[in-house]
Amino acid sequence: MAAIAPQATPDGRALPAHLARLLDEAASALRGRRVVALTGAGMSTDSGIPDYRGEGSPKRTPMTIQQFLGDEMFQKRYWAGSHLGWRRFRAAEPNAGHIALAGLEAAGVVTGVATQNVDGLHTRAGSGRVVDLHGSMERVVCLDCGQVYWREDISGRIEEANPWLEQPGAVKIAPDGDAEVLHFEDFVLPTCTVCGGRLKPDVVFFGEFIPKQRFRQASGLVAAADAMLVAGSSLVVNSGIRLLEQARRRALPIVIVNRGETRGDARATVKLDAGTSETLQALASRLTADS
Image (cartoon, rainbow, N blue to C red; front, top):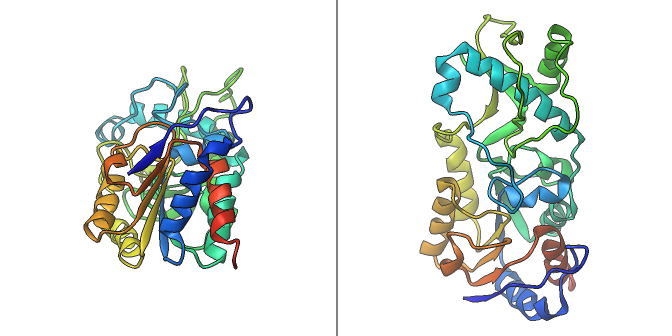
């Protein structure tokens, strides 16, 4: 495995010149192949959405699905924080890394993206074939009848029923869209307009399994690919390492772009210890130079 840790430039974005060799190796590993991209929270940090494990990420204990299902007070706490976090998610824009992957798909290099993120930024950047492994904050589902809503509609209902819900100062959010909130006891929960049932953002909570059909779709992307590009994931979550292992068993070239170590580094053909935005831009330039 080839690997190097670059020195950051003052602005923290531009790639140092001595990474050119590794970028060339990565491009060589991927060129002429159908590439599946696997992305994680580090992909969206340049869009203002924090990473769980990156430097400076907030210390937190995410709510489990058991807590959410077992106590209405947990549902109030989650929905209050999730609504505040959703405001930040709405304001986030795709960054250069998202745009680079969408461009590679348009060029016929990337055949699909399996993402662990719930922010919807890949789709907004123009990627057409995206599997949201952990769901999407843009959808809300009724746990009792299965009715699906757009988050914007639920957000409007929450604001109408809870006009007091304001958070002074900066709102600290997490990659799953949750936010810290102190007073939530009087929060009025949104309910299903079809059956009156409990609503939940269509995201995978801690302690909850990824829907089998969704994981099969991601596995299908890997099965149809000739190479894998991992961007912004430490591969700590099992969904990512399972997909990486599928690629390894088929002896596919694997390129990993991530700041810091990942669980897949020993299996990588090329590892670039760098930020995703600038690295994917540079990699895309090499892969599409002759097209």
